[in-house]
Image (tube, rainbow, N blue to C red; front, side, top):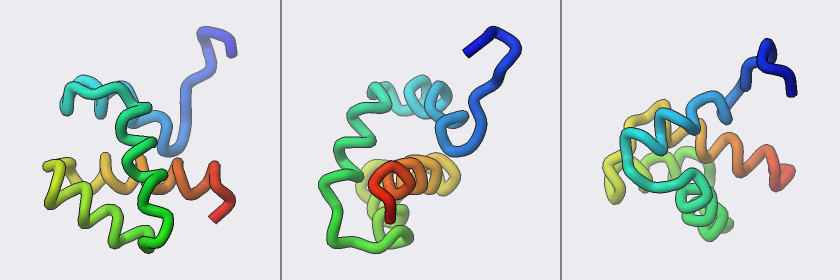
Amino acid sequence: MTTDEKTKGPASYFPSIEKKYGQPIDYWLELVGSRTSMKHMEIVSWLKSEHGLGHGHANAIVAYVFATQGK
C-alpha cells in the first residue's frame, strides 16, 4: 500500500479504537471471533455493555470479523 492510499471500511476505525480503549485491535478481534453463536447486533450490544465501546467502534469490529469469516 502506498502512502497515498487510505484504509477504508471498518478497518479505518482500528487506530482510534486502539487509542481510545487501550487494547490492540487483535484483542478485540479475538473477543468477537469467540462469539460465533451470536448475531451481529447481539455482539455489538455486548461490546457496548460489557466493554464500554461506542456503537460505531463496536459495529466496525463486528463487521470486520464477520466479513473475514464470510458471514
